[in-house]
Length: 120
Image: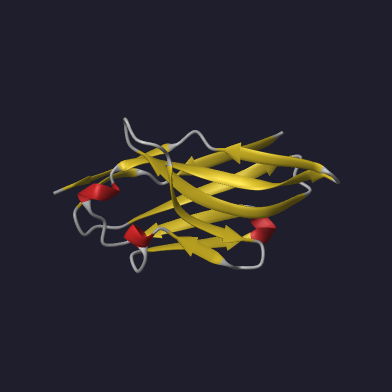
């Protein structure tokens, strides 16, 4: 079983910055990718940013140029640096990790979520 622990959420004003972190632990054989998603009440969870083990990244159009995802493979940790935050970024942010706990045994785990609130 793989556990994800998130931290770094909070409240900021428009234009402010926050950094989210997520650490994966447990019976991890390898992690193929880690990323961040967000969800607001009444809407589907949406991708924010992902990073694969090769360093490739993918960002939602709405956060390009403002958010940066980074990952420290040796520590199974992923970060999301969020700059120039806008009220539209207000959401619960979830960490996700996908990989293998053994040969042929995959995992797809989610964190508990951390609230980010941006006030105007």
